[in-house]
Length: 188
Length: 188
DNA sequence: CTAAAGTTTCAGTAATTACTGAAACTTTAG
DNA sequence: CTAAAGTTTCAGTAATTACTGAAACTTTAG
Figure 1 (cartoon, helix red, strand yellow):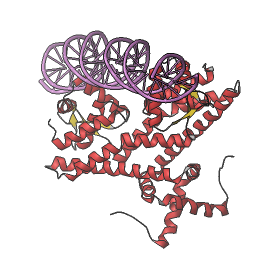
Figure 2 (cartoon, each protein chain N blue to C red):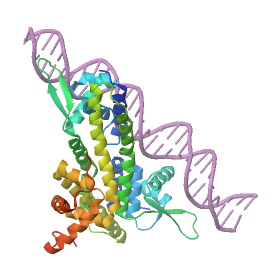
Figure 3 (cartoon, rainbow over the protein chains, first blue to last red):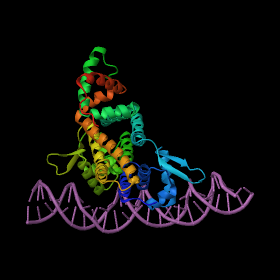
Figure 4 (spheres, each protein chain N blue to C red):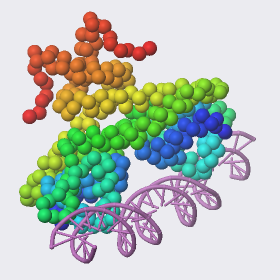
C-alpha cells in the first residue's frame, strides 16, 4: 500500500507527536494511518506503507488494542485480519485522556495518600506535608473533574466548549440562583 | 543535604512520573525537592541530595527556569545562587498544561491547517480530509477551552471543580435562561 | 587585575527504549 | 492430519536519551 503525500505528511507528523502522547513513533503512525483510511487494512498493508517490520506492527496493534482504539475485521473467505480505527474522534480523545490519567495521576495520588497518613517527624516534614496536601487536592480535583466531563458526553461537552468565555458568566449566574437553594457540598 | 525517608519517597516518585509529564527523571526529582523544601537551596545541595552530577543539576535548573517553575534567590554576602519553587501549586499546574499544549497540540494544529488548505486529489484523500477536519476541530476546541479555563483564575476554577456532577445541571439551567436572550455565537 | 568561588558546556559514555527479523506458534482449508 | 497462510514473541542490535565530570567560562571580593 502506498500513501499519498498528503496522507504521508499527516501520518509522519502524528508519529512524532505520538511519542509525546504516550505511545511510540510507530504506534502513532499506525494509528494515524488507520484513522485516515476508510477501509480496514491488514497488518501487512501497514508494515508496507510505513516501511516497518512485520513484528513491530504486530506489537503496535496489540498496544492500540489495549487502548481500545482499533477494531479487528474479518473478510469472508480471507484468513487475514483487517484493522480499523474505532469510534469517533471524541471517543479517541476520551481514551487517550483516560489512559494518561491512569498513568500520570493515579499512581501519584495513591503515593501521596500513603505519605499523608504518616505524621511528620519534624518541622521540615510538616511543611512538606502541607505542600503534598496541596498537590494531592489539585490532582484529585483534576481527576474527579475530568471523569465528570467524560460522563457528560459529547453533546454537552460541545456546549460547554462553545460557551468559551461565557463560562465565567454562567458560573456567576449559578451562584446567584443557588443562593436560594443553598450550597451542596462545600468542604471547609 | 540529606532527605528524610518521607521526602525521599516523594522526590523519587516524582522523578519517575516526571518522565511522563514532559521532563526527565532528574528534573522531576529536582522540582519535587524544591517544592517540598521551604527555604531556597543551592545547586550543590540539590546535587548532593539527589546524588547527581553538578552538571546535570545545572542543566535541570535551566530547564525548570524555562518552564518558569523556579526562582533564584541571592543571600547577602554569599556568591552562590539559591533556588526556590515559584508560585502556587495552581500556577505550576497551569505552566505544565500550557507547556504541554505548546508541545503536543500547537504543532499538530498548524500542520492540520496546512493540509486542510490543499484540495483532495481523490476520494481517499477526501475521506482523509474529513477526518483531519474532525481532529482539527477537536484540538482547537481543547486549546481554546483550556486557555479559557486559565483565564478564569484559580477561584472560579475551584468553583467549577467543586460543582462536579452539577455541571450538567448548570448547563441545562443556562440553556433555559439564554433562550430569552438568544444564543451568542453558535457556529454553522 | 588576580584568583577564588562559583556556573555552564559538552564530548564521551551509560542507560533506556524501539525495532528487526528469524523462530515459534496458531489457525484453518483441504 | 498436513501444510500453507498467517500472527506473535523475543534475543540481539540500533537509535535515542540522559548523565558524568573535566574543561571552559563567568562573576566578584580583595
